[in-house]
Length: 213
Image (cartoon, rainbow, N blue to C red; front, side, top):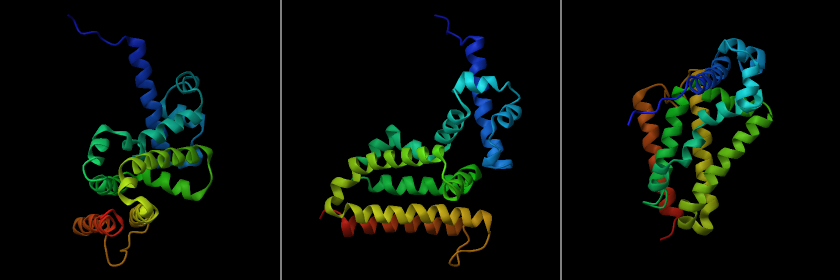
């Protein structure tokens, strides 16, 4: 049987949506968040601004879709992570998620700018993104980590909070300031590997000290 091809209008719609999403990222990188206006987005994508309403409903929905696609929190729903979490009460999962977050922030300036934007001002779209990220993380924690830590679960949450927030800061500091931090050069491959090893060590320590014996 001949393979069914996607019709022209459907294909063109998806291409246009992709162009609009990429335009949001381009504007964030080159002009900043305050330039995310419907006219600027449409002009950057070289499309009629009416298509933003036709395909996304509003410019806010377009920006929200872009942020969801880019945000590392969305990957928490993957089947691979869910299977990984069952192996050792989420220990390997914790390590891999933190190191992948670290890597994503180090290579994606748009993602860094989103984190800075979250810190800089209140925004309904960003609040929704943060809440979405928190819900996904909590679902994963409740399923894989909480049964292992029981009454010590807040101590492990605190460790994760410190590791995640330091991951944010170290990457953003390295790219914006460029100086070393505690003698470590975050742009140096060897120093980054040391940090990755320490993430593993801290997680191992937490599981040993606060987990079920």
